[in-house]
Structures are given as structure tokens and as C-alpha cells.
Length: 186
Image (tube, rainbow, N blue to C red; front, side, top):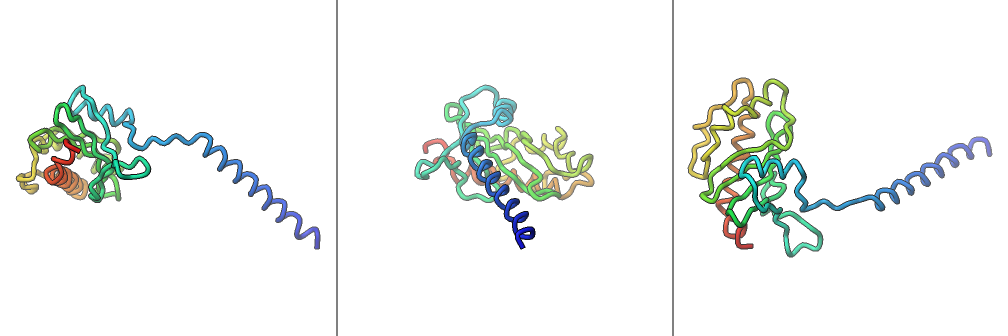
């Protein structure tokens, strides 16, 4: 009987000890980077608007650092440069792949899209990734709440990715339009 009970008991004890050590190592090395601009996000801000004082809006009423999203689906954070009255909305949208488009949408002081920067793209290589081409992205320059999204031509063979981009941009300008006072005065 002892020969049958001891091996599983010893393995269970080893697993418990290793799990405990992993939890301790995680807690000792964890760095909360909520509300911190990553190098990639800084590069996107700089590419769209140039140098500026960019910061992620944080909810002042939350106990922990929580980015402001105005409860908009797919919006991860809002980055502002209050001095220049510009705003970048970090958004994740479905294209062909679920969550395949992770973007920074730069919105100028008039509420129009100034530029788009890809933080990551999980779309089909060679097809869906064509939404990164300047010829497609250029159509979004000046896109605002009044723009008819049907005026933007889809990328051939990347319909879902194109629709995802249109949806992300529409969502970003709508959020900006509805909350611009809070964004710059909050």
C-alpha cells in the first residue's frame, strides 16, 4: 500500500513547493506598468503628431491605476497631449482575426483623424496585412464623425480587415466627439 501512495504524494508535494516558489518569484518581480507609455506607443505618438507631452488618461476615482476608456468596447486607453490639444486612442478591433487590429488612432483638435499607427496586427499575412499600406491608410486622413465610411475603398481580398479598420476609426472619432471636453479638461 505504501508503494502506491508515496509516489503521488511526493509528486504532489513537489508541485505545491514549485507553485509556491513561482508565486513568490512573480510577486517579487512584478512591475505595474498600467498607465505607462510603452516604447512602441511613444513611437506611434511621435510618428503621428511629432514631439509632445503624451500621457495616458487615468481614472482618478479608481483605487488602482486604471486607464480611462469611457466604457467603449475595444478601447484600451486614451493618450493625450493637452498642450497641443491632440488625442490618440489605443483600440483593439476585430478584422479577419479576433482582436487582429491593435492601433493608435491619432485625432487632431478638429476631431479628424491625423494618422494611424499599428501597435500589432494579427491579420492574414499578405492579405489582411495590406491594411497597413499607405494607399489604404491615406484614405482615413481627415476622417471624422461626418465622414461616410463607405467612401473609403476596401483592400481587395481583405474585406474583414478593411471593415475592422473602418469600425475602429469610426469608434475612435465618435468617442473623441462625445468626450472631448472630458479628455482635455479632465
